[in-house]
Image (tube, rainbow, N blue to C red; front, side, top):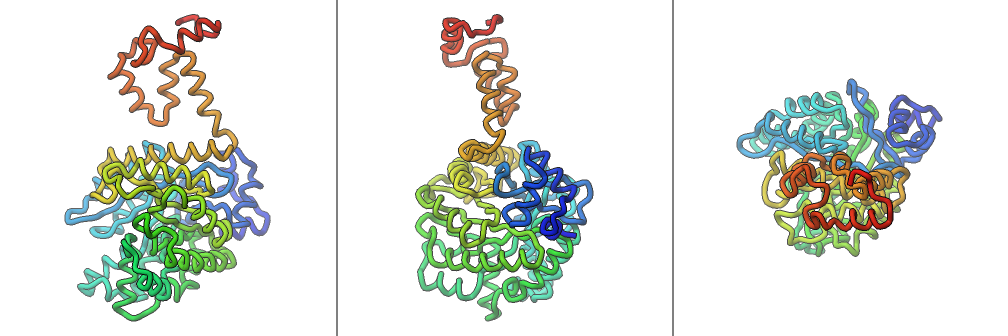
Length: 432
């Protein structure tokens, strides 16, 4: 039985109990959230020894890292190094977004490499196989697409990203409005190209009941991807984006009625002053479904530093109610990230997630900061480094700047303000 159907019947599953323990809430809180659709546990019944992760209202903001085969020389080994880097940095989930090469092998290796939830975008593989089979991705058939969706779900993929709401009416609205950056979604642009070439409606929308049937069979969570994701600030909250969001809200309702867990993926480029409104609109139209945001980046000029721009946007989006952040790396808009940039991107997203959890007053969120503050006050450098979001980097910077034996920071040295004031107030450590 699916997590949603169990929750609706008042039953608490082992996965709900594990999530409740990790989140420091009651199992009943998790069950009720799943029943209402405000919480999901992406946990395919085919996965063995997986670690259930809860995503949704009242839970810690989660982070996802993306990897995948791409380019002329796809290398599974290289991508698995990125998976390991993301896991070491503390990611909560992995998305395999492979578009070429041995996609089946890459997906199965990724599933084997982590017990955490793994997501995919099946359309990528369906298009790649159509290119090889028919010499043109636009010749992909509906059966080709659904065969890939079924195959990936059967392999144990926990959440399937699908552009089910990108309809011909949405595409026509985008054409009429004249966007500056028409399409930035790889899947959305290729799907729309298929629709135009074949003069057919989006098969994921037209055959949505079939999508739900596959998801229900494996208890795979659907992540409704937004094909009309704005690719620049000027296109944020335009008519095409909002119309697609309205459609996604209806698809959320149908999924819940079918006993399928569902979340919604959000925009990529949003100015600071529109983030709160964007999240509020999604929450209203999509009936409280967990919101999976890509960043969002808050300025278009941050090439080479988009992980910082995205961390700013991610913190505000999560504070406003988004629950799942897709990391952005420094290589975004420029090229593919290496393992170090993957690590850096996850850390940036985790900082954003934690900052939002603090702002929301999430139970237990401030404990981490209080522990580090106390260690800082006591000039306990070892504990400060241990408690840092990235202990390895913090420790290396400490060693490089001051030497491990110094009790003070690099800026103040023996005139450390923390030490001087603590001694005056009589609260200093005796060892200082």
